[in-house]
Length: 567
Image 1 (cartoon, rainbow, N blue to C red):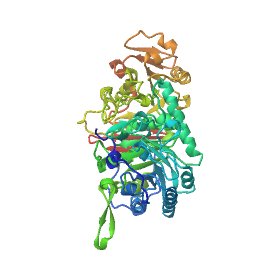
Image 2 (image 1 turned 180 degrees about the vertical axis):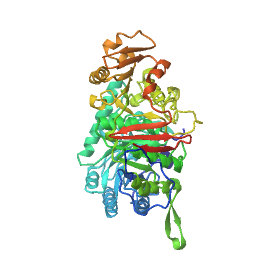
Image 3 (image 1 turned 90 degrees about the vertical axis):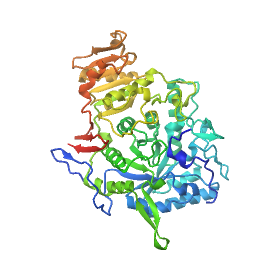
Image 4 (image 1 turned 30 degrees about the vertical axis):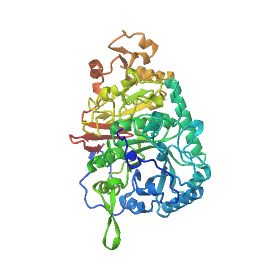
């Protein structure tokens, strides 16, 4: 089986207990394209975004030692926080001492940290000497569950900023990733969905996610973060109260993932984070310094609250330690590390943002029930199979594929059609990687989105299994009063519109007196659909969004680099 994440390379053997061991805006457009890196200031810039790093693959994870060796590199890089991968010691006393020492280390250095719980993703059981089962959740769910005394200690520290459930989407869809004697074992993460309908499965996962958030928030945990490896379940988890973090780099289209995560964060009042993951299809680091630079700029100008790079030192990703004369260890930043430092010390100082994603004025929306489909074929790939919400009894259909067709439309053909899904995990192996595709103010909402999030739309797509009556009514009101154009499958349209559909092909049906209309189609890739929506798609070489009074344009060149301008 091929690996699908670097952590499975680093921790492929079963992990066991560690027993003892500033841009100024004027009235005219100003370019903010990243300049060539000059001498980097020694003082980090104050900025509109909080920056971090992740320590997956660090030797301390194996040894159970406090990551004191990461403090100096973090300060050199200009990182504000660390996503720290944690495996509990077998001894309850050792666990508590570890947490106290960890908090003291970060408090003394005026840095922050979060606890990453990824150990639960591939280890079947961890029971300490107090009898606490760390990987046993309610209702036989297999997920990281803090011993109460440890969680209390964590939350006593001002340096502690929360808990990360790493790849929480992957763990639900694939029922964790636990291999015993070469055979994958299904262990439900947030609920066994076998035998349930799509709607019931969605509700069960959300209910268990909400219970998890409440469990942690009861002790005042600041953030309960879900870091996604696939472009699904953002809305479900955000609704549960989780902070959403989308992947950049890795096997992802940056603007697609940002549009999905942004919609979830807007709709359910979450912060918006992104993880810039340097892994790519079995290679780490698998993305260049230039790709990292462009993705840092992209995430910043998309209005993220935070970004962090995964990870800080595995295979020399951001830095290495070089032993000098007398055994003195020197920190040597890699090319990628120097890009990170340039960004935190130089770029942010020169480019004040002055807005967040919350100020976005979306122009195109995709509204859908998220059934967790992102193109995994029924025959499977990389060990992944066709399992909506992790179910062995549900299966994706042509209805599920429709939303992937929309990405082909709104990217003006750059993102492939659904035959190969919407991720490099599902593309043919020879497909060259690209981060960027054209996008004109696209945001993705779920089937329950309120009208207040749709007021600025010019074009909307309705797709998937269901749309709530309240949302459908809001959409129709905007068609009738604001001239909204809606592309929809016939079965999701209001009854009065659906009844006018001829039964096949693409048909335009006017609604109201402001120029709005419905474009009902049984094939979103029909040329008639493409022709009608073309005026809304923007330029075919740029990503464009409006945040408050600022129009942000990212021009994409042939080498997948972006030049940013703000007006």
